[in-house]
Length: 117
Image 1 (tube, rainbow, N blue to C red):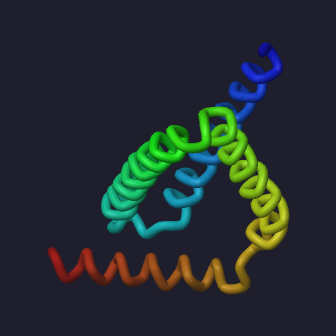
Image 2: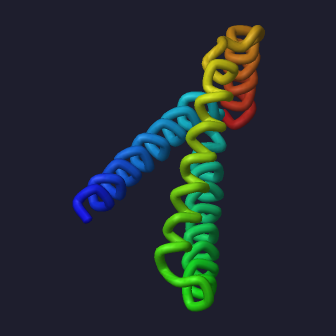
């Protein structure tokens, strides 16, 4: 039983790491004018998916039992982890035009400020 408890703790820690990393990435890459909208959409999507997962797990666990449903959840998280490790090197490469995009964005923001003043 203690092995299972340890594994659930490990899954929780990794979930916090993924959420923190993705929100940091969004905050760093998204235009400041759209941050509220982006995080609003992210929060809404996460809420909808948590609700859907809870409903599906509850329904399926009545048919299959709790242990097989937890095993399916673990398999899904394992698959997501393997996929993330496979795609991570590609995501960590710097974008070719990142500096040019940032310069264009800052110029657009300056123009918007001048128009509003």
